[in-house]
Length: 69
Image 1 (cartoon, rainbow, N blue to C red):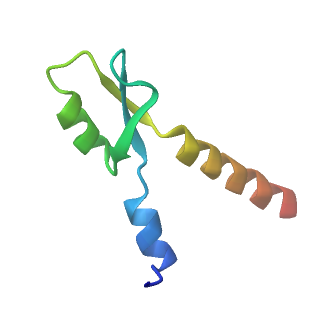
Image 2 (tube, rainbow, N blue to C red):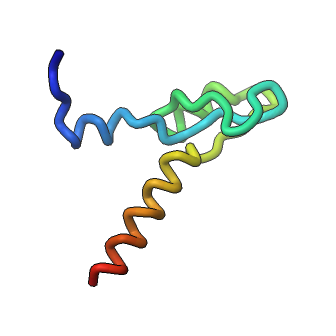
């Protein structure tokens, strides 16, 4: 197999989730951009939110950084 550089992994991480009654929580988290997610949600009762896995990872990285410096 091939090894993917960290920058490429970050770029394809599924940051946004299509959420709503049909999708539940966290929802369908296959969207790399908010605009992609909103285009899919258009005309439905769904909406888009940040993927909680991504949000909590960002929060943890921030806390670790502040604790070290």
